[in-house]
Image 1: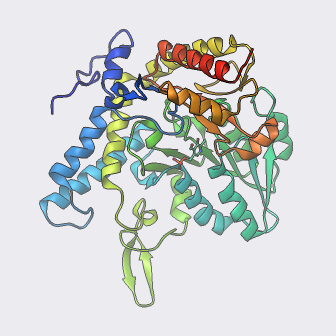
Image 2 (image 1 turned 180 degrees about the horizontal axis):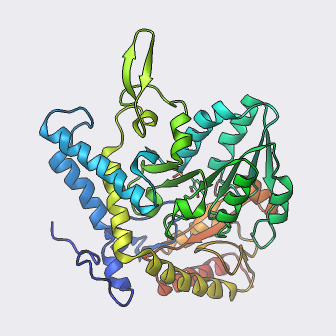
Image 3 (image 1 turned 45 degrees about the vertical axis):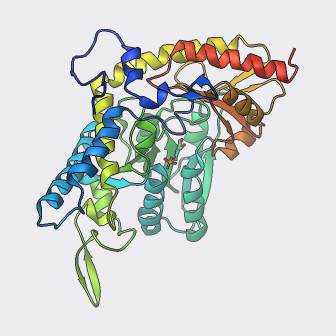
Length: 420
Ligand code: PLP
């Protein structure tokens, strides 16, 4: 299959060649309800470039077999592909391969920590410190753990502009805090949190720090050593990879002492009738046949992002976000949530009295895909005093003219709802 790929020549272009990048994503060429697709829902899940689709295709077409312990050619090749993917992911975030556990995504990564590290280390009276802007995936697992262990969950407050009240963090952090779990970037407000400072203070207080990187890893270069956290969780599908694959990074000394999570094949070195010996890292925490094709696609997605360069992607998105904030800000009756600075292009808003769901449905008629609802952030919605927001989220393939299409489509909604 002859397909374009703006990154395949490996030459870093001086400019950001948006048309070539867009041409790498086959889905961006389709029509929706007769209009060119304007995809502004990448925070929920990103689209995939040809190179990722092809990597998965090639894996299944040429080398698929089950991994590990296979003596035949295909199994050896599949194992190399799977473990090679782990090296790519690990290298990308400044980690060692043994510290990277493949999981289904951020949700599974956080649950893994809660059910293994958490079950072993969190006791009655301990405190788990979260923030009010956490995604349900970084809230409910800790609530479940706290319920089982008799621990207490506390929440750092969020300012009206979307920033964390760091004085609140300082006040709530104590020697009773066993874990701090915080999102790197908010999936509703787009705000980038000071995770290195949060991790440093957690460490000084003797607490372990988990960072939810689901909305950060797609947009910025993540270095887990520089952040200084103990666990970092992220999802492949939000950063160009297939669904059903993600990574948990953990500090080796913590992972070493964590009991296995799920039991089964792959995670043992020996099983006897009276028990088992767990496999070394990372396999101890990966029971069963893994998502091999997903891992292969994940590695290719990271290579694709690296070929363009996360710095350049970040610069493009920064400009686009500023343009979107200005354009949407100029629409009378439209309220934007989240800060102007220190943010990514995840833009939540409400428009006059039009419910976010109605807005998303009307925009869809024009081919404009946005998300509406609580974005798995119900406590944050309550804090903001709203039940739902509309959310446009940008990624490396979006353009200013797509923002214009969004604003135009809002005009249609205004007409239908009689917004003056
Ligand atoms: N954390 C944040 C901040 C998110 O935005 C999301 C998904 O939207 C998740 C966690 C959960 O990610 P996944 O559904 O890929 O497990």
